[in-house]
Amino acid sequence: CIDIAPLYKDTGHFTYDPGFGSTASTKSAITYIDGDQGVLMYRGYPIEQLAEKSSFLEVAYLLLHGELPNKTQFASFENDITHHTMMHESHKNFFQGFHHDAHPMAMLAASVASLSAFYHDDLNVDNPEDRQLAAIRLLAKMPTISAACYRYSIGWPFRYPRNNLEYVNRFLHMMFEVPSEPLELSPVCAKALDLLFILHADHEQNASTSTVRLVGSTGANPYASIAAGITALWGPAHGGANEAVLKMLEEIGSPDKVETAVKRAKDKNDNFRLMGFGHRVYKNFDPRAKIIREMCHKVLAELGVNDPLLDVAMKLEEAALKDSYFVERKLYPNVDFYSGIIYKALGIPSEMFTVMFAIARTAGWIAHWIEQHETPGSRIGRPRQLYVGADKRDYVGLDKR
Ligand code: ACO
Image 1 (cartoon, rainbow, N blue to C red):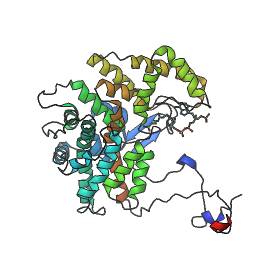
Image 2 (cartoon, rainbow, N blue to C red):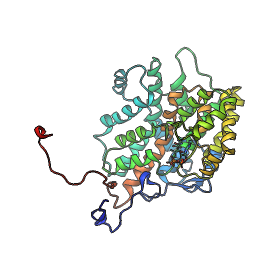
Image 3 (cartoon, rainbow, N blue to C red):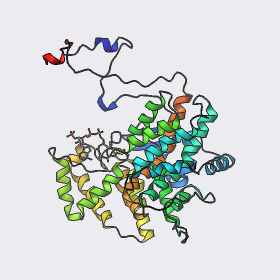
Image 4 (cartoon, helix red, strand yellow):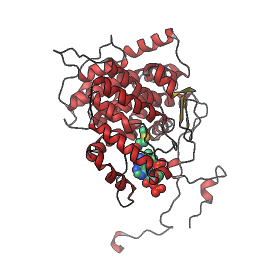
């Protein structure tokens, strides 16, 4: 029996809430979620409207500044980003130290952390202009660094960003263009990727955003804070789920094997879970999953791709939604259930899926980092614990043990 009285003497109360299921760590004006109703809004705008009418860069502006930009503000924002897309030439040398088959998320986390080594000295986290500059640099350089991670992993030389292209197209060119062959991209590719970026841009206090805030609360620089977010995103229970979903669908292989997979997912003696199912907050449906499912069918049709994994995914969704185990636990497809099939159709390899997520989520991470620094009286994040270890005991010398 633990005496918890000393734990609450500072504040008058003490809560034990494993996984922070019912504890708000902060106030925020950025993103609203109603998990029971399946509602998601960025700065008050429903995700469905932004997905249909907006662009990722406009959404990034909205998350950072709280309002949609007018034409002049948007042109200036886009211009600022375009002028920071290059990686420092010395930064490229970092890649030579990585093993050729390193996971792109490992290279991304290390590369973003290393931005501190290039841009730390001229940065004062208490200065609003410096914070905005860091935001621009991160949004601008994430696609360049991400494409470099991919090209390094397949042994291709890096491509410089083509600044006459807009954000998503520029990224696709850095990923796939080779010098002798101009890249012919279907407009549907850029549109689909832009939509996925909008849907992944922010999601209030998820594990990676909370990590960015916790690291940011110590006064750490934004590059270190975002790098911490990237590592938190990597896990399969969070952003790594998109890569895990595709692996799972490939392992299941065909619609007739779906029943066995569902049976395994319900077996408490089996570690297997249906990846891309379930969410801590959404207990009705994930509004992003609805939009992505629709987009998935459209992209495959427009690109003329016939992917048998889509049949497996649809059969799995149908089987799970009819099964009492999933219904009782309110486990529905989440944002990552169909996103991997779209990425695959765009030619993006599965090891890069979580990197895609990270490019988009950078907008949310940096908006939260800025909000935290703009909030008067922000304190260092310092969770408590419930000690369950040994009672007080006396040290015994090594010769007596
Ligand atoms: N397959 C099978 N059973 C599941 C699944 C699943 N995907 N998800 C949850 N459950 C079960 C649990 O075993 C548990 O059952 P029990 O009550 O009998 O013990 C119950 O549902 C509740 O699950 P928790 O793990 O307690 O739920 P939590 O809110 O902590 O976790 C999470 C949410 C991590 C998303 C979980 O549903 C999961 O692991 N899903 C698969 C991974 C995934 O898709 N992650 C992406 C999330 S979205 C994102 O981060 C972008």
